[in-house]
Image (cartoon, rainbow, N blue to C red; front, side):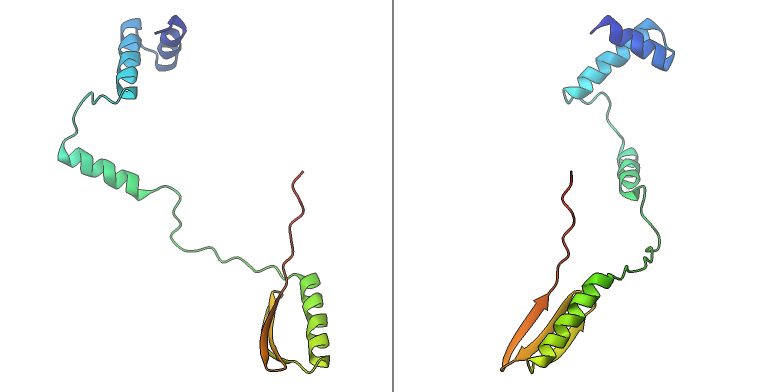
Length: 120
């Protein structure tokens, strides 16, 4: 137990030297896994409930407005025009993401992914 640790605890908790030494010894015992005192069943239940209560849980979900990607929309519209020119039957269009279509009796999905710029 270092003198600096004792002084730090004394200043931080405004306690006597003996109390600081006792606190540090108890901390070391807890670090070794020793139980310094036993909780009653009521205390254990209260402790468990406090842990499960959580902190930042939201009561209602936040509604966020979806960002429309104009560039992806333009690319998929151009693809749609091309596919229609190839006599493809478009079965489903997912907003700025994918197009499902049928061409020559085969089913296809064209998915467009916009990659994020690399982190520097």
